[in-house]
Image (cartoon, rainbow, N blue to C red; front, side):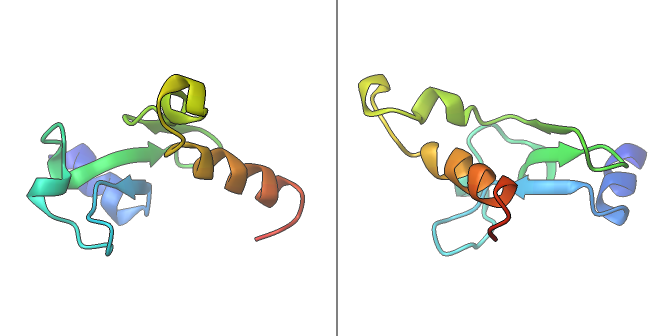
Length: 82
């Protein structure tokens, strides 16, 4: 509980499981994580850990492209776009 409070207080919770409209609900949480947390970062914000695996849904040949948007946005950000 102390770790969770510290992560929340430091703004280290990066992703949460949510509905398509952005509402954080229990139904949107596939694994029962506390606070619907799906991803966190370290204090320096240069390391990200996340439970979902978007790389498994990055190409149509893999059965889904739902994860592709994450990688596309990372490339765009790295190229100076936002």
